[in-house]
Image (cartoon, rainbow, N blue to C red; front, side, top):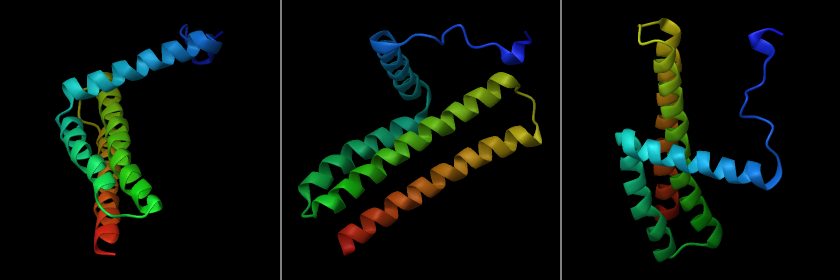
Length: 127
């Protein structure tokens, strides 16, 4: 069997063991992002302000859900962007057009997420 067809040795766990392992990996990912990614820490700080604010301001429950979701979306996008950057850098630190494209696309995704955040908050606040 070629290496391309081999499954990861970490696959195959099922049930509660898989869920516990997945939770651990997820927490490790959050810790790593917070420890190593300035942009993630900045977005956590922003979310720490905006999410409670969403429950303080006078807003319809659906609007409140959109405010919280748009705030969480920027965190999710930053995690994915950072994962792309780490994977690309692990593969090679040499400059390559495809590596640049991957990193630029991750950055563009975060830009759109931030534009979405600003748009949702503006629409809800300015009505």
